[in-house]
Length: 308
Image: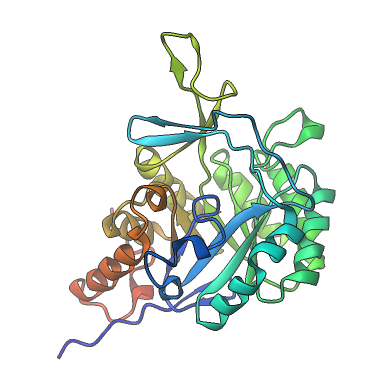
């Protein structure tokens, strides 16, 4: 009789019963997927990023299909932390009680806004197992560049919020300077890293000569960036000791397994949720079988097991 492998992992102090999570912005607040499968089967979900106050987001059109991916310019529309708690707090608390950890993503335009949002989560969301700090938000005071695009900018956010919560802090990295930024975040007190966020890109309608989005550029996600994300996970894993959550173009369990071998402790399913809503549990099933097929009895034995 073949024993079931251990799938439990520790993501920077968050004990997950398995390494499959969902990426913020592609999964709503979780309850939207309950009609497709039992969401509590996952190790964790990551809620849509929320700020200290509601954000209206960008004008339509906000999304468009591109070759092997999706571009978005949603602009992090969100109801704010209070709105999240009012809309989904009861569900998220019960989901946590059912064994699925809830990771709440935090958005902001400045260190001060991140601090206010974190303090609100501390006050209103005791069921949150961890906070994921999205440092890919535009830093208005710096001219609109991603606040986490430099080591100094990234560290300034984590240094500002670190003493405002005892919960584990994950950080969602912008796809730039990942090694240098990761080292700065480790020094600033981050507990884990989510690698990577969407990649800035453009899509032009050749008939109208205008952007396919309401803005000139947007964030590119999906399978087209998967191998770039795998490379960045591997680079970060060589540079820091922090556990990594691999994000980018996971469509199958094989995609997830690549992240694990490259050094990721956990993985997040993103765009695939919008294409096939039951992708995440299928990825989990495939990963468990893969661990057994590799002759291992613990998925932790395969983290970073890539050989060159």
